[in-house]
Length: 294
Ligand code: SIN
Image 1 (spheres, helix red, strand yellow):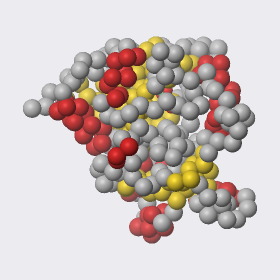
Image 2 (cartoon, rainbow, N blue to C red):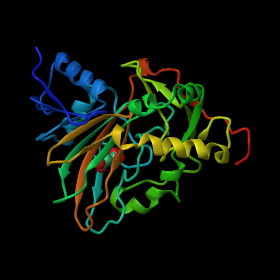
Image 3 (cartoon, helix red, strand yellow):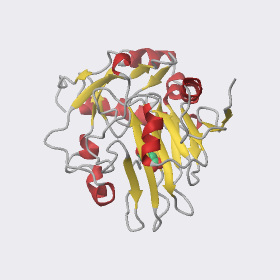
Image 4 (cartoon, helix red, strand yellow):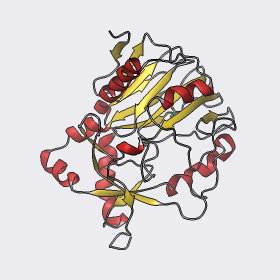
């Protein structure tokens, strides 16, 4: 029998779950219920949690192996835990643009679990956008075209020496990407391995072009998709409270950390869940160079 109370927060995605203390060890049935809610609602939220880094790692590991970020240093004792801190003097924030975590990897992360440690008095909400809703809102003709395409993803724009995150090094401890960052190809439309639903899988932070297309050829269609995918009807907005936890599905959700709290501190901790090696679909392979020049 379920102990979880699940309350949707918006039409396209997002649900708040109460009746569970994530710091406690849970049997497989409770974890299966949480996982089912995560897949159904795409992003789930829990209030009033108090997780130590070790407990956050323990909870995350119930869903798969944890990722160690290749470009952002984790905590000294818990390399899987990233501290996402914006100090009052920082101008930019981490995650301040629409993206799916780790799409630049060969086998991208399935989910991210973010825990609020210290919050500004106002602002600092996070937006989420359902890429299932974005796909389903397209015409059948556009869906059929996109179904045939692959896209190239790269961490370069964000994490290379000249990338956006270079500005955030002090707060984020972003480590220098050594040499060229890799490029990997993923389908533009991902069939979710757990729900079977189709979702758009391109994002403005990490998708650089379509496979076999130049950047110039790719730009108009990518720009259209990036604009379409963040339409208000596909979104939900989470107002954080101290201790809250958000767990989102990177396979079908974009997110955006708002930077609307100048002069205040915000401190979050994130673990990122990788797919189980046995469940990695044959979706990722090393990118081929585009056939046309940029
Ligand atoms: C992230 O992009 O993982 C951070 C989101 C947030 O801080 O709200």
